[in-house]
Image (cartoon, rainbow, N blue to C red; front, side, top):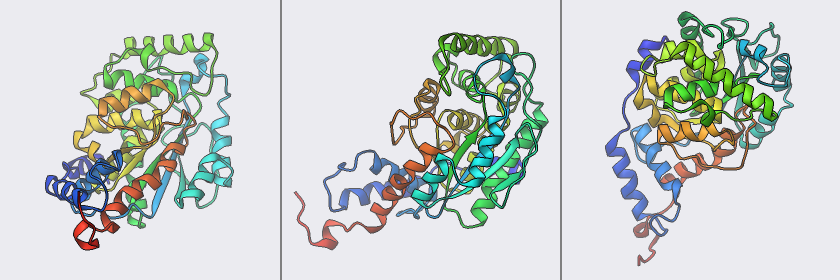
Length: 350
C-alpha cells in the first residue's frame, strides 16, 4: 500500500471502547488503579481496537530495519560502517540480543535491508527492500531525495501489511545502522523543536571529543537544511535515514490497521515523531516499550505524550526494549479479557 491510502485509513481512538474499558477496570476484582500504568494501557488498547476487551497482542512480529549513513564519514562513531552488514548477518544467524529476546517472548523476527551499503544475502528472515546503498552525508547535502524517503516509507508500510496479513496482532520496531543515532537526534530536534545538544547522546559509547563533534555535525545539518516539521517527508529526506523512514512507515501501517506497535528506543522514537507528523492520530497505536538512555528518546516520547513501560538504562536498539515490553502489553489486554468482576466472582467490594 502506498503512503496516501495508509494515511487516509488512520482514525482517532474509539472513545466508546475506551470508556467501556475504564468502566470494566473499575469492576474487576482488584482495588481501582492498583495496576497503575497497565490500566491506562488497557484502555488505550481498547480504544485502538474499537472494542472492549481488546484482542490479545499475539502473535507478535518484530521487524528490524537496517541502513547505513553517509554522515559516518564525519567521525560521529568509532565503529566501522561494515558492522551494519555484519550485524544483519548475526540477526539472520540468530545470534544477536534481539534474537534471544524474540525467542524469550515468542515473537517472530524479520530483518529488512532498506539501506545497507553492501548487498546482503540470507534466508527467509532477510528481506531485500534496499532503496539505496546508504544515505548521503546529511551534514553536506540532503541525506535522501524525497522520492527515496517515500520509497523507504512505503517499504515500511509494505512490511507492516505483510506481517499483519500473515496473522500478526502486534508489531515491534527494530533497527540496525552504524551512525544512526546522529540522524535520529537531528530528526528529534527538528520535529520536537529541541536544541541539538539536548537530544544528542553518546550512541554506542563515544568519547568526549567524538560527542562534541557529533553535536556540531547535527547543529550544522539543521542550520543547512532548516527542516520544517510541517513537511515530514522533506524533513526525513533532509536529515533522516532509510531505516528511520521505513520505521515511520511501519508505524503508520500498524496505525492504519488499528494494531498496536511497540516503539523501541531512540531510532524508533524519532521515526514515531515523523509518523505523528504525517498523521497525529497514529499516536493511538504507539506503545512506548522503554526509555532509552539516549536523551533524545525522552524528548521524543514527551513530545508524543507517551510514557515508557520500562526504564532499564538500555541503549542497544535492535528492538530489544520493545521485545521486553511485549509481555506487559499482553498482560494489560489479558486483564480486561480474563479477570472476573466483583459481581461475577462473588467478592465483596469495599
